[in-house]
Length: 139
Image (tube, rainbow, N blue to C red; front, side, top):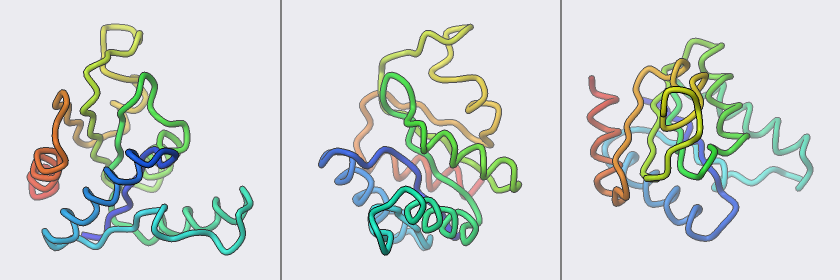
């Protein structure tokens, strides 16, 4: 399956996690568009938006990392776009902190509602995350 891997990419640990997860998904037979691996031709907001939107349009589904006290705003937008264009969305969260959302949900109800699958495994390694995501994609 052609996948768009959405997630925060603003620190070295975030980029390392994304690259490692993309490699594992690729090794399992998926084609992965990882935004950080496809820099925009110019470092402008408009160029980054167009490049990432092209990646979303290319993809058949989205895998989104929901770690952080509040999921990354760009990642959240990408999930909404995937939902609106009827692409499956798999959310993954390894962060054990809970958001202050109503009902004690791990994150915003709009993200949970837009997802076909949401996986929460506290402090999961990249291997555990990849295996859970690969299993969800197969199902």
